[in-house]
Length: 296
View 1 (cartoon, one colour):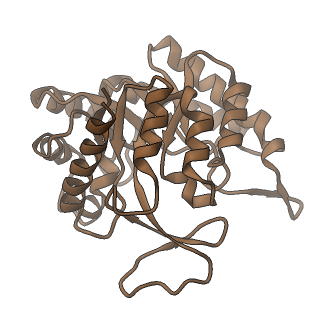
View 2: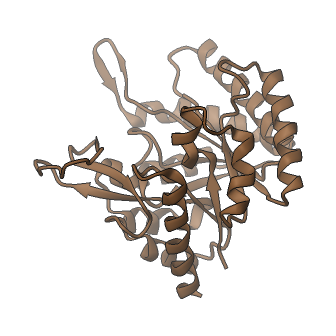
């Protein structure tokens, strides 16, 4: 049966205000009932060096072991489409350093971005198809290095360029490495107007990790209710993060598709709602647990 984890990004409200540190999230996650935790880019200080991140990773690992809370994943930002070979080489080298951080952290896998926004050359947009060879080559170099360290790497359907299920499937096939997979976020398809059931159905067989989140979707031109804190999607809808089970993402059906595809790993809650993050996580955990138990 799938197990429920939480990403430290879910505590962003508190982390950004200094009410909590990444170290603190371990104890809180355990108290809330989560079975594992995922860490985002390690920030022991404002602009940490790799050496500082490696030392912090060891401290976090020791703290997690103290609370008997597995660290399942390490998530890092990345931009794998660069216009020059030197820029690509520098970014690949940086990501290899982050693989070392993931190893020091004791994470079971590492997730990295590919490219968040469109790039331009001579005033024209560079298509995903033209970016693909560079992105795939860089991702392959990173996962080859990670394989030598015993840790899988994956890419999430995240960022306006890399959220489409067909693009992620193409990228997966182009990287073509047994150490590389997909982190499937059941909610992120809403950011580009793709149906989550369609997207999850396409990518479920390649998933080595899963994120659960929910959004309230406001169609283009709709008047937003008072108090809503929404952001625009690629298709000009507006969406707002919310408690799992209270939005428009068919989370339970997506889980059913994953279960049918044989996925039985962690499902990590990535909470982005405007409610207090602790209360939002409590409610999301309760609702997600009920869905998983109903699926058997």
